[in-house]
Amino acid sequence: MSELVVPLNSADATNADMFGPKAANQAALGQAGLPIPDGFCLSSDAYRMQMKAYGLDKTMAKLPTADVQDARLLANDIRIGFFDNPIRPEILDPLLKAYHSLAERTGAPIVVRSSALVEDREGSSFAGQFESFLGLANEEEFVIAVRACWAALWSVRALRYMGGQEIDPSSTAMALLIQPLIEAVASGGGLSQTGDGGMILSATWGLGEAIAQGEVVPDRYELDADAKIQHIDAGRKTHKMGCHLHGAEHHTAVVAKEKVDEPCLNNDQIVELAGYLKQAEAMIGMAAEIEWARDAAGFKMLQVRPLHMEKSVIPDEIWARHPGIKGHPAGIGWGSGKACVITCECELARVGPGDILVTHVAGPTLSQILPMVSGVVAELGGSTSHLASLARERGIPMVLGVLDATKRIPDGSQVAVDGVAGIVRWIEG
Image (cartoon, rainbow, N blue to C red; front, side, top):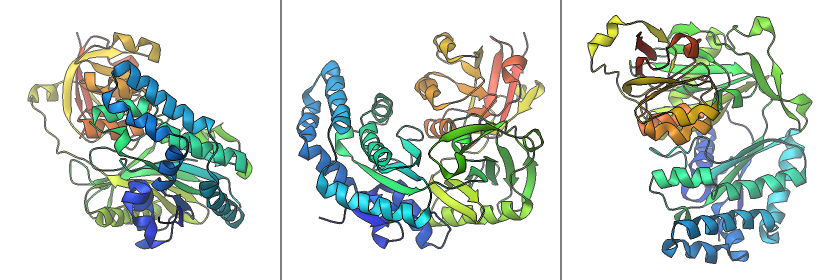
């Protein structure tokens, strides 16, 4: 059996079949000379050992012959089994040794991130479907987070996603990526290709969770294919997420008024980050989406995964004569339909097949209705949010960060969404 725990700077950590694409790509970035945080990986073998030790593998073996109701109960039993049973000593001992070494070495709270063998692959990003735990301050919190990440493979949200991708949960496993929490001045994402042949970077103050969850409108930096800056659109970054004084309290803070629409990156930093993005693209051999953070020491690359993009196509030029507003493109597709304007998730039942959903926050909870809509428009969020990633792989046009969209677009009007150009147009009644 291979080592259950390996340092992130080890060549062994680049084995995606053992440690999952998320951890393996992170390790490969470091091997390629890009800046990444310290850390280590927990092998998918640990997940399998835990299952076998407590008979969860036998429960899983019943799934192929179970009906829908029984399959749900069996999945629930597996998920609860990860929470109820202690981690086996042969796993826990090397895991805690690595945890304490990392905590002592960095002096920072710890982050536990999922790295399932099926995520961060082309066509199945699993963006926002599993779990990550930030700012873990002690051993007890760390151990709970490990078990919760294992259990997340059997959550309703993840199983629904896997069902849509025709992925059998019993055919895969969960590895983990453990790193120190970056004391981020700013964080964000990037797309190495856009529909017009350029690149996009996004940024917000503090940790990147505010972008991932679609809670702010991040800065948008548009560059050409040679990484030359073409346009800077400062976002509306009203709040930031951080870790209070390197402690365990993961908190949200209001951004100072003068910082809300101040760009997070200067021109030199934009060009430097664009260079890392192009290196990441070359490393995986295709268009790439990244996540990054910048602390006092500089940039840290946090994630790279395949990116699906399309060229902009407008099937009916009549739309060019109607009013339009621009936002952050999700990067794929064209769609039109009746606007369904909602201001609260409790109104989601109003959304019908083929509608264009117009809403305030485009958070991951909206992923359940993506298959039924023709497009999504939201006032908050950016091109590298979790929902934007899910929209790209499902071919759903989406434009985020559209100022006052719920007020300007009339409910019931005919709307067109260009998810590549990032433009929303409507026909007023």
